[in-house]
Image (tube, rainbow, N blue to C red; front, side, top):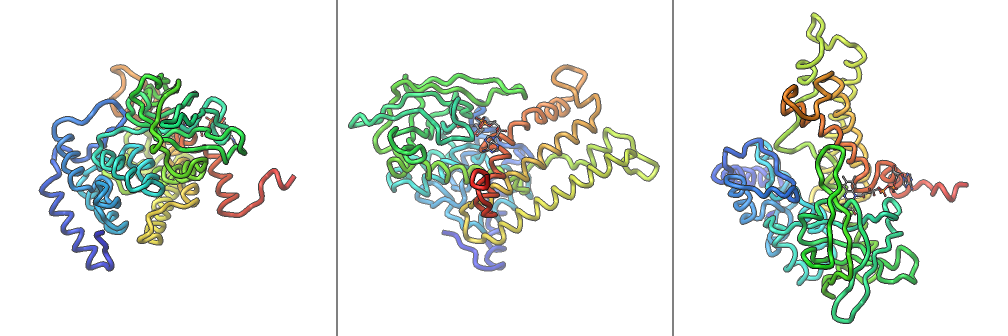
Length: 402
Ligand SMILES: Cc1cc2nc3c(=O)[nH]c(=O)nc-3n(C[C@H](O)[C@H](O)[C@H](O)COP(=O)(O)OP(=O)(O)OC[C@H]3O[C@@H](n4cnc5c(N)ncnc54)[C@H](O)[C@@H]3O)c2cc1C
């Protein structure tokens, strides 16, 4: 592993990273965000070249061990790499996939050596698309009520049931499915996590259209679908613990890390474009000015809190329950920013389609609508507050106080 023990070593690593990026990052990709891996539009041309080079280097998953396709960097070195990439406007072309942010880290935590060798390198190269089958029509926040069942057929698992809101299922090759393997056990204790091939006759994914116009998630029907016995991740009937661990990795990826290649326009610049200014160049509407200032202060505080969490965690890259705090605050900040932006845009903030609006205006409006989902996905805003109350503040259960 590439460790950096002090500032001098970090600077030496950053110089090495700068030189590699200089030689390998195609300038045409500057400022270009990475497409969601399950968007159905695979990268072409320079975007593909950039992805291949990063995959070969292992820097798409910089902290994973080299033997599983990663870069073998310590958390601190990876942070240095991320900052060097942000400096030149380079996005991580492997990053935006559930495989990288959730499934891979959980396989690293719970997988056998053979499972890691089989599943991690294709994720690290961005070749395999994963989805997650947790939620069901009768099991969302109360996930442990899930009913999809896996029967032990001796040489394989047989899976039947329905999942819902499964992001990217229509493009996925594999799914991490939470299933009931012991219906007689208490509900948290009869669940297992099975890695399931999506490309088989017993699996059907039906896309659901979202308010923002995209169709990024699906209903998924499993009808006697098959999974290999050794695609059980973690212990049999221990899937609740494995599944919760994966959700911590998911929430850690949703904390709104400020270091990214493409930052949205600063709100004050949006204001200057769309709203009336007074003779001193300030936003004329004093109430809007106050709310905007408050938002900018929250954004700054959030960014500093993340920077502090990174500094404090140093070598330890594992997420804890504290990610619920950062997920809740980043959700609130992103949604408030979107509300303020469309408010400042006035009638230009009503554009859904058509020549009367610029492309940026349409993207902003759709992003504002689509962004409503972020306080639900990965566990709702209210459920994050329950976790903070129970697991961080050690407050008693609401039920036990009545
Ligand atoms: C964009 C998006 C992508 C998603 N992707 C996936 C995916 O890939 N795979 C997957 O399995 N799922 C996915 N989900 C589903 C997501 O995990 C669930 O929607 C979420 O857990 C909430 O469950 P629910 O929709 O059944 O709502 P419910 O659990 O029915 O909740 C309804 C409301 O009640 C509140 N509530 C419920 N219980 C409590 C409580 N105990 N205390 C306080 N308030 C409570 C909730 O906060 C919410 O406001 C996705 C959702 C979205 C929006």
